[in-house]
Image 1: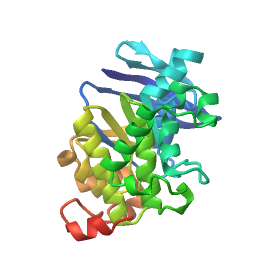
Image 2 (image 1 turned 135 degrees about the horizontal axis):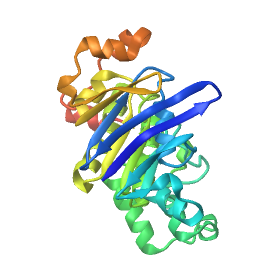
Image 3 (image 1 turned 120 degrees about the vertical axis):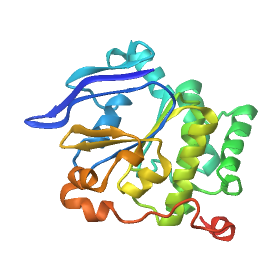
Image 4 (image 1 turned 135 degrees about the vertical axis):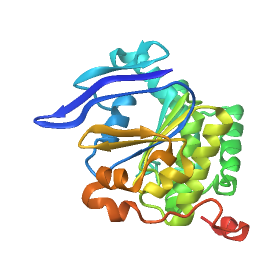
Length: 267
């Protein structure tokens, strides 16, 4: 389904992504781990066509998406939704509008700017918000929400694209443990219910082990581990993280460690 072959990205003499090769043959929840500067974010940005590769190829269902231009490139970016650490919402707009803007690649810039949304688009957006426990915030300005709430809105906006893949770049890096758990559970549920691949750059090892089917470890732009979480031993993890190993081993809140009352209070 997805085949990344000898992917490279150079910034001068720095190899941010170095000869990266891997395959995804079925929908998976994949955690990409590694210390800061390992090449994780650059890899996702190349896959979404936010930056160009120096060399290599990425085949999606037999088509090299790195060769796409103009209309075909925009169509791929619709199919490959991106979720960012900074949320990238429009602060002054209400939550519902922010979510519907996920359809901007389909509905056109002019219609989006004038908020000429259809009834079906509004219903779809409300359903997405309701699924992530955010429907009651639909008419609030995005800037009034907490970080965890904003990230869940960003996930709803991504789902409005009706994507075939989700790329999440450090989606919980700025969140407290409870909201981090809610966001990771939302991504895992989307993967399972929609049967689409989710690739998430994650900082802590425990998060990757708790939520992902597969872990890819990167160090200095290269893949140094690619297997199921149970195969990642502490010595290999410490090699991946280097000087950041102790921080990476910090425990993360799991889906079984919080009660329903705490879940309801999250926001």
